[in-house]
Image 1 (spheres, protein in one colour):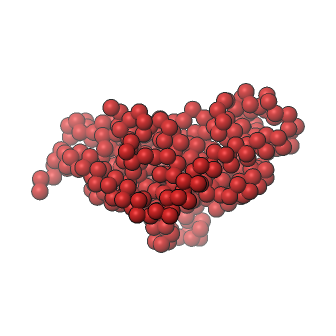
Image 2 (cartoon, protein in one colour):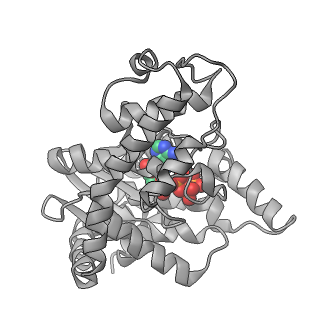
Length: 333
Ligand code: AQP
């Protein structure tokens, strides 16, 4: 059976981008057809300036939302990264396989390091921001993962995990499965409603352009109705020339099925397109929000799922990490 692994960072409240680009597919496809593990990757949230209490709160909230969205612990393994030591154990070994040049070429590193320097006025960037893709490679490789379902923004990191697996296998003997990224058919990159050339990212500051999974229906409506489009009159699907309209068409298509190009022919004005998109998003989020409320009333259930998930994950990862330690030359304990 295909082994699937993917994760989500508790760096902010989960967004519509997370849901359409990743979580929905985990729920509808991956947990049903594969041996799947889904992880709140909390160690990755420490790579930029962070508030410890907020990370804890967001980790709990992300896990609760994954279950509310439909991940079922009977079908898949849901856990928190820092509860399984194997991730950090393997990460160091993979740092001995990766090069600093590879790390510095990562687009996300360049963008985020620039952002951090700007925020701190020329201040320092955490070393973990540079090495984070290696930890992500370790997350994936520890489980003998075949497929990593991600949005477009993460494909470069999955490529790195592939390169490191191949290099390790060539140098030290076959140890790792070489993983591949899989992406959703539509909405692989949901864009910020206010800046439709930038990804809708949960750690961004631009609140009005980001639809959060826990936004009230009226807040969703307001954000979608105020989405930046352009001054042209016709509704045309053109990602390059008309990114704002294309983003709305893609969101609408992802919510209700169909494809953005066909939908563009149905609308004569931006007003009705926005109204229908807003309602489609509200309806998409409604059951997730209802279930989230129920789960918040039962924190012991969520904690139990995470405890059991970590135990299962540990059992899966330990043999792989032990064999990587042996292969690279470390003495067995
Ligand atoms: N806008 C998006 N469109 C489609 N897919 C997306 N994903 C994230 N944003 C979009 C996918 O969701 C999964 C988990 O994402 P993440 O936690 O790694 O990243 P994030 O939500 O983008 O959070 P940050 O902190 O704002 O991330 P950075 O700044 O690192 O980009 C992934 O599968 C991702 O592809």
